[in-house]
Image (cartoon, rainbow, N blue to C red):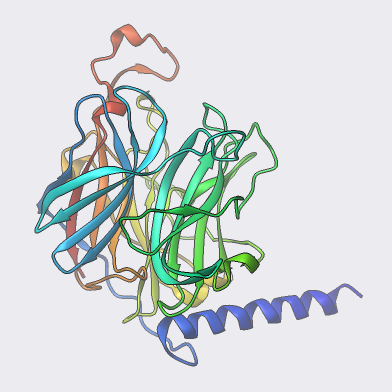
Length: 373
């Protein structure tokens, strides 16, 4: 008796994934395409993107390139050596930083995002709310405690990418358990720049760490809809040690020419010395979009970005350079903006901070690297 409904749900889910893919790619049916070879990351292209002042940090970039201008939203503190996350917009023209300022902050009062706002992901679309058509949506992590706990995902809207940003009042991906890490690290791509539908990926952390994907319909924000979440496969992912790995802390982009999804993601295992709470390196992976939307398939690793390649002790919290709708602007020449960090004693097993020579959090700054396929 249970098999019939399960089959019908599976069929609807498969049809929905196919329909979304057709809208994203501008085709009616999926076509098979061979997965190309890996990406050759060129160390000669490594360049500084943004270095915050002493006593400040910047990480987890959402990067949009539009002609000669780059729009980079990051997780950033706003007061000297105060760990309270804001979302900053750093704007670069012809590779030169022309402005950097806080554009989204914690809400006041007893709100779900009253302490940290972090992990931005910005896309362009058509979002109608209370008589106004907004062209930009920012997905972000928020929480209400001074800890890495009770994270939830919200969304804010703007008519201009510089803001001001108007927050939707409630989280759209919730965390009922106030003691677990929760839901966060959102990454979004537009189904179509002319629609309000968005593909949203994110991480959940409670008894385990997992990645999920949903479709969010923000065409009419007052009646926003979020599809049931579908877990993203870990198959094919490899860690810094070569062992099978799991997906979290990822940023995604669409390669229309190959009908693929590409991600840059945190690698594991975590190191034992300071900072032991971030991965040692990131990996770029890809798979057919239709598999990603269904939670099936196998990832194809396309190169690690690590200390050997970059010279940095840690490479972490990275983002792909994208268009306003979340596509790769040059699929044969992908670029990654990553966060660097120093490392030193102490270790996770002997936390004697008098041994520290690396002020790791306040060494976080942004660098870029380009590759070819």
